Image 1 (spheres, one colour):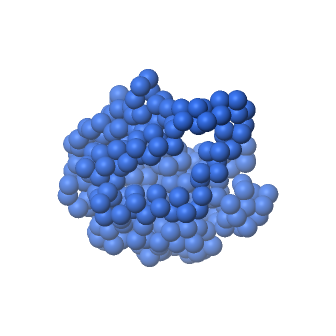
Image 2 (image 1 turned 180 degrees about the vertical axis):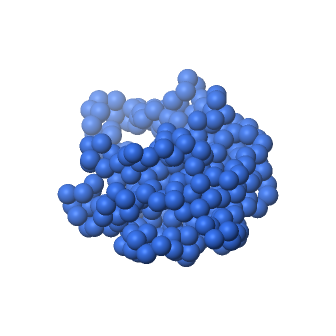
Image 3 (image 1 turned 30 degrees about the vertical axis):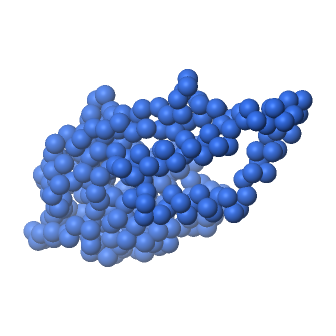
Length: 298
Protein backbone atom coordinates (compact mmCIF):
# COMPACT_ATOMS: atom_id res chain seq x y z
CA UNK A 1 0.00 0.00 0.00
CA UNK A 2 1.29 3.47 -0.84
CA UNK A 3 -0.02 7.02 -0.77
CA UNK A 4 0.32 9.56 -3.55
CA UNK A 5 -1.03 12.93 -4.63
CA UNK A 6 -3.18 13.04 -7.73
CA UNK A 7 -3.48 16.35 -9.56
CA UNK A 8 -7.07 16.99 -10.61
CA UNK A 9 -7.58 19.49 -13.47
CA UNK A 10 -10.38 21.98 -12.72
CA UNK A 11 -11.59 25.06 -14.52
CA UNK A 12 -14.35 27.64 -14.77
CA UNK A 13 -16.16 28.32 -18.01
CA UNK A 14 -15.44 31.79 -19.30
CA UNK A 15 -14.92 33.76 -22.45
CA UNK A 16 -11.44 34.36 -23.75
CA UNK A 17 -10.07 37.90 -23.54
CA UNK A 18 -9.63 37.93 -27.30
CA UNK A 19 -13.28 37.10 -27.77
CA UNK A 20 -14.30 40.01 -25.54
CA UNK A 21 -12.02 42.32 -27.47
CA UNK A 22 -13.65 41.33 -30.73
CA UNK A 23 -17.16 42.02 -29.48
CA UNK A 24 -17.61 42.81 -25.78
CA UNK A 25 -21.33 43.42 -26.31
CA UNK A 26 -22.15 39.82 -27.16
CA UNK A 27 -24.78 38.42 -24.78
CA UNK A 28 -23.67 35.49 -22.62
CA UNK A 29 -25.82 32.95 -24.41
CA UNK A 30 -24.17 33.82 -27.73
CA UNK A 31 -20.63 33.47 -26.36
CA UNK A 32 -21.61 30.15 -24.86
CA UNK A 33 -22.82 29.08 -28.27
CA UNK A 34 -19.46 30.05 -29.77
CA UNK A 35 -17.79 27.67 -27.31
CA UNK A 36 -20.30 24.93 -28.06
CA UNK A 37 -19.66 25.28 -31.78
CA UNK A 38 -15.95 24.69 -31.17
CA UNK A 39 -16.73 21.20 -29.88
CA UNK A 40 -16.95 19.17 -33.05
CA UNK A 41 -16.69 15.47 -33.77
CA UNK A 42 -13.33 16.11 -35.41
CA UNK A 43 -11.87 18.04 -32.47
CA UNK A 44 -13.08 15.51 -29.91
CA UNK A 45 -11.69 12.68 -32.02
CA UNK A 46 -8.31 14.41 -32.16
CA UNK A 47 -8.23 14.84 -28.38
CA UNK A 48 -9.13 11.19 -27.80
CA UNK A 49 -6.46 10.00 -30.23
CA UNK A 50 -3.86 12.20 -28.54
CA UNK A 51 -4.66 11.14 -24.97
CA UNK A 52 -4.93 7.47 -25.98
CA UNK A 53 -1.58 7.48 -27.73
CA UNK A 54 1.48 5.64 -26.41
CA UNK A 55 3.08 8.95 -25.51
CA UNK A 56 0.76 9.28 -22.49
CA UNK A 57 1.66 5.82 -21.17
CA UNK A 58 -1.85 4.95 -20.04
CA UNK A 59 -2.37 8.16 -18.02
CA UNK A 60 -2.11 6.27 -14.71
CA UNK A 61 -2.30 8.30 -11.47
CA UNK A 62 1.11 8.96 -9.96
CA UNK A 63 2.96 8.23 -13.20
CA UNK A 64 4.70 10.29 -15.87
CA UNK A 65 1.62 9.68 -18.00
CA UNK A 66 -0.48 11.61 -15.49
CA UNK A 67 1.89 14.59 -15.64
CA UNK A 68 1.77 14.62 -19.44
CA UNK A 69 -2.02 14.39 -19.38
CA UNK A 70 -2.46 17.26 -16.92
CA UNK A 71 -0.06 19.45 -18.89
CA UNK A 72 -1.98 18.69 -22.09
CA UNK A 73 -5.34 19.50 -20.50
CA UNK A 74 -4.10 22.79 -19.05
CA UNK A 75 -2.75 23.80 -22.45
CA UNK A 76 -6.10 23.01 -24.09
CA UNK A 77 -8.04 24.81 -21.32
CA UNK A 78 -6.00 27.96 -21.90
CA UNK A 79 -6.41 27.65 -25.65
CA UNK A 80 -10.17 27.42 -25.23
CA UNK A 81 -10.24 30.53 -23.03
CA UNK A 82 -11.19 28.69 -19.86
CA UNK A 83 -10.33 30.35 -16.54
CA UNK A 84 -8.58 28.56 -13.66
CA UNK A 85 -11.02 27.06 -11.14
CA UNK A 86 -8.72 26.97 -8.09
CA UNK A 87 -7.54 30.53 -7.59
CA UNK A 88 -4.95 31.09 -10.29
CA UNK A 89 -4.38 27.35 -10.77
CA UNK A 90 -6.01 24.87 -13.11
CA UNK A 91 -5.27 21.98 -10.75
CA UNK A 92 -5.98 20.79 -7.23
CA UNK A 93 -3.98 18.18 -5.34
CA UNK A 94 -6.08 15.15 -4.28
CA UNK A 95 -4.51 12.60 -1.87
CA UNK A 96 -4.98 9.02 -3.09
CA UNK A 97 -3.98 5.62 -1.81
CA UNK A 98 -2.82 2.79 -4.03
CA UNK A 99 -3.56 -0.72 -2.74
CA UNK A 100 -2.06 -3.60 -4.69
CA UNK A 101 -2.02 -7.32 -3.95
CA UNK A 102 1.67 -8.25 -4.01
CA UNK A 103 1.09 -11.99 -3.84
CA UNK A 104 -1.38 -14.05 -5.82
CA UNK A 105 -4.27 -14.00 -3.33
CA UNK A 106 -5.46 -17.47 -2.45
CA UNK A 107 -9.07 -18.55 -2.09
CA UNK A 108 -9.81 -22.08 -0.87
CA UNK A 109 -13.32 -23.44 -0.41
CA UNK A 110 -14.08 -26.36 1.91
CA UNK A 111 -17.29 -28.16 1.01
CA UNK A 112 -19.51 -30.27 3.28
CA UNK A 113 -17.78 -33.48 2.18
CA UNK A 114 -14.46 -32.26 3.53
CA UNK A 115 -12.91 -31.64 0.12
CA UNK A 116 -10.88 -28.50 -0.59
CA UNK A 117 -11.11 -26.47 -3.78
CA UNK A 118 -8.35 -23.90 -4.28
CA UNK A 119 -9.35 -21.42 -6.97
CA UNK A 120 -6.79 -20.14 -9.49
CA UNK A 121 -6.13 -16.40 -9.20
CA UNK A 122 -7.27 -14.50 -12.35
CA UNK A 123 -8.65 -17.63 -14.04
CA UNK A 124 -11.28 -18.63 -11.47
CA UNK A 125 -11.24 -15.84 -8.93
CA UNK A 126 -10.04 -12.29 -8.42
CA UNK A 127 -10.01 -10.99 -4.86
CA UNK A 128 -8.62 -7.87 -3.21
CA UNK A 129 -9.14 -5.60 -0.23
CA UNK A 130 -10.01 -1.92 -0.01
CA UNK A 131 -8.84 -1.80 3.57
CA UNK A 132 -5.69 0.30 3.70
CA UNK A 133 -3.52 -2.18 5.56
CA UNK A 134 -0.53 -4.40 4.92
CA UNK A 135 -2.36 -7.73 4.78
CA UNK A 136 -5.72 -9.40 5.44
CA UNK A 137 -6.71 -13.00 6.05
CA UNK A 138 -9.95 -14.90 6.61
CA UNK A 139 -9.98 -18.38 8.08
CA UNK A 140 -12.97 -20.70 8.42
CA UNK A 141 -15.56 -18.18 7.21
CA UNK A 142 -18.94 -19.66 6.32
CA UNK A 143 -20.05 -19.12 2.72
CA UNK A 144 -23.64 -17.92 2.39
CA UNK A 145 -25.51 -17.38 -0.88
CA UNK A 146 -27.58 -14.17 -0.59
CA UNK A 147 -29.27 -13.89 -3.97
CA UNK A 148 -28.48 -10.44 -5.33
CA UNK A 149 -27.17 -9.10 -2.02
CA UNK A 150 -29.72 -6.29 -2.16
CA UNK A 151 -31.58 -4.46 0.61
CA UNK A 152 -34.06 -2.15 -1.14
CA UNK A 153 -36.99 -1.20 1.17
CA UNK A 154 -38.70 0.86 -1.55
CA UNK A 155 -38.76 -2.26 -3.73
CA UNK A 156 -39.91 -4.48 -0.85
CA UNK A 157 -36.78 -6.55 -1.46
CA UNK A 158 -34.27 -7.64 1.17
CA UNK A 159 -31.96 -10.56 0.48
CA UNK A 160 -30.57 -10.23 4.00
CA UNK A 161 -33.91 -10.38 5.81
CA UNK A 162 -33.75 -12.62 8.87
CA UNK A 163 -30.04 -13.33 8.35
CA UNK A 164 -26.96 -12.62 10.40
CA UNK A 165 -23.95 -12.65 8.07
CA UNK A 166 -21.51 -11.15 10.56
CA UNK A 167 -18.08 -12.64 9.95
CA UNK A 168 -19.37 -14.70 7.01
CA UNK A 169 -18.53 -14.65 3.30
CA UNK A 170 -21.54 -13.68 1.20
CA UNK A 171 -21.82 -14.88 -2.39
CA UNK A 172 -24.21 -13.07 -4.71
CA UNK A 173 -25.40 -12.64 -8.29
CA UNK A 174 -24.43 -9.68 -10.44
CA UNK A 175 -27.04 -7.12 -11.59
CA UNK A 176 -30.54 -7.03 -10.04
CA UNK A 177 -33.84 -8.98 -10.29
CA UNK A 178 -35.25 -6.64 -12.91
CA UNK A 179 -32.78 -7.83 -15.53
CA UNK A 180 -33.36 -11.51 -14.79
CA UNK A 181 -37.15 -11.25 -14.99
CA UNK A 182 -37.31 -8.52 -17.70
CA UNK A 183 -40.15 -7.15 -15.58
CA UNK A 184 -40.33 -3.36 -15.94
CA UNK A 185 -42.20 -3.15 -12.64
CA UNK A 186 -39.39 -4.87 -10.73
CA UNK A 187 -36.52 -2.48 -10.00
CA UNK A 188 -35.93 -0.93 -13.43
CA UNK A 189 -36.54 -3.90 -15.67
CA UNK A 190 -33.79 -4.50 -18.19
CA UNK A 191 -31.87 -1.37 -17.14
CA UNK A 192 -29.49 -1.96 -14.26
CA UNK A 193 -30.14 0.08 -11.14
CA UNK A 194 -27.51 1.10 -8.60
CA UNK A 195 -28.49 -2.02 -6.63
CA UNK A 196 -27.08 -4.13 -9.45
CA UNK A 197 -23.63 -2.52 -9.39
CA UNK A 198 -20.65 -4.16 -7.75
CA UNK A 199 -19.82 -1.15 -5.58
CA UNK A 200 -23.28 -1.16 -3.99
CA UNK A 201 -23.12 -4.90 -3.37
CA UNK A 202 -19.75 -4.70 -1.63
CA UNK A 203 -20.80 -1.72 0.48
CA UNK A 204 -24.09 -3.37 1.47
CA UNK A 205 -22.27 -6.56 2.46
CA UNK A 206 -20.02 -4.46 4.69
CA UNK A 207 -23.05 -2.76 6.27
CA UNK A 208 -24.42 -6.22 7.00
CA UNK A 209 -21.18 -7.14 8.78
CA UNK A 210 -19.86 -9.66 6.23
CA UNK A 211 -16.17 -10.51 6.39
CA UNK A 212 -15.98 -11.00 2.62
CA UNK A 213 -18.21 -10.36 -0.37
CA UNK A 214 -17.95 -12.29 -3.63
CA UNK A 215 -19.94 -11.65 -6.80
CA UNK A 216 -20.65 -14.39 -9.34
CA UNK A 217 -19.61 -13.17 -12.78
CA UNK A 218 -21.95 -13.73 -15.70
CA UNK A 219 -21.18 -11.92 -18.95
CA UNK A 220 -24.68 -10.88 -20.05
CA UNK A 221 -25.99 -9.38 -16.79
CA UNK A 222 -22.56 -7.90 -16.00
CA UNK A 223 -22.25 -6.45 -19.55
CA UNK A 224 -18.54 -7.29 -19.70
CA UNK A 225 -16.49 -10.50 -19.99
CA UNK A 226 -14.37 -12.18 -17.31
CA UNK A 227 -11.25 -10.70 -18.94
CA UNK A 228 -12.45 -7.26 -17.83
CA UNK A 229 -12.68 -8.48 -14.24
CA UNK A 230 -9.21 -10.05 -14.43
CA UNK A 231 -7.62 -6.89 -15.84
CA UNK A 232 -9.55 -4.23 -13.89
CA UNK A 233 -9.28 -5.65 -10.36
CA UNK A 234 -5.65 -6.72 -10.46
CA UNK A 235 -2.68 -4.39 -10.15
CA UNK A 236 -2.85 -1.05 -8.28
CA UNK A 237 -6.32 -0.11 -7.04
CA UNK A 238 -6.75 3.59 -6.29
CA UNK A 239 -8.98 4.99 -3.59
CA UNK A 240 -9.37 8.14 -1.52
CA UNK A 241 -7.30 8.29 1.65
CA UNK A 242 -9.65 6.98 4.34
CA UNK A 243 -9.26 8.34 7.85
CA UNK A 244 -10.35 5.01 9.34
CA UNK A 245 -8.17 3.02 6.87
CA UNK A 246 -11.34 1.36 5.55
CA UNK A 247 -11.96 -0.76 8.65
CA UNK A 248 -15.73 -0.58 8.07
CA UNK A 249 -15.36 -2.26 4.67
CA UNK A 250 -15.40 -6.01 4.20
CA UNK A 251 -11.95 -7.54 4.65
CA UNK A 252 -12.08 -9.09 1.19
CA UNK A 253 -14.05 -8.32 -1.97
CA UNK A 254 -13.96 -10.21 -5.22
CA UNK A 255 -15.43 -12.13 -8.14
CA UNK A 256 -15.64 -15.80 -9.09
CA UNK A 257 -16.44 -17.23 -12.50
CA UNK A 258 -19.79 -18.76 -13.38
CA UNK A 259 -18.27 -22.25 -13.63
CA UNK A 260 -16.77 -21.89 -10.16
CA UNK A 261 -20.14 -20.85 -8.82
CA UNK A 262 -21.79 -23.83 -10.49
CA UNK A 263 -19.45 -26.12 -8.59
CA UNK A 264 -20.18 -24.37 -5.29
CA UNK A 265 -23.93 -24.24 -5.84
CA UNK A 266 -24.26 -27.96 -6.36
CA UNK A 267 -27.65 -28.53 -4.73
CA UNK A 268 -30.55 -28.59 -7.18
CA UNK A 269 -32.58 -25.65 -5.78
CA UNK A 270 -29.55 -23.37 -5.76
CA UNK A 271 -28.41 -24.42 -9.23
CA UNK A 272 -31.89 -23.60 -10.52
CA UNK A 273 -31.66 -20.17 -8.91
CA UNK A 274 -28.24 -19.52 -10.39
CA UNK A 275 -29.16 -20.80 -13.83
CA UNK A 276 -32.05 -18.40 -14.13
CA UNK A 277 -30.44 -15.59 -12.18
CA UNK A 278 -33.53 -15.11 -10.03
CA UNK A 279 -34.60 -16.53 -6.70
CA UNK A 280 -38.38 -17.10 -6.68
CA UNK A 281 -38.61 -17.38 -2.91
CA UNK A 282 -36.60 -16.24 0.14
CA UNK A 283 -35.56 -19.75 1.22
CA UNK A 284 -33.89 -20.34 -2.15
CA UNK A 285 -32.00 -17.09 -1.86
CA UNK A 286 -30.34 -18.01 1.44
CA UNK A 287 -28.27 -21.12 1.87
CA UNK A 288 -24.95 -22.13 3.41
CA UNK A 289 -22.36 -23.36 0.92
CA UNK A 290 -19.42 -24.43 3.04
CA UNK A 291 -16.44 -22.48 4.38
CA UNK A 292 -13.51 -20.62 2.88
CA UNK A 293 -9.93 -19.65 3.62
CA UNK A 294 -8.61 -16.39 2.11
CA UNK A 295 -5.25 -14.65 2.32
CA UNK A 296 -3.62 -11.71 0.55
CA UNK A 297 -0.76 -9.25 1.13
CA UNK A 298 -0.64 -5.63 -0.07
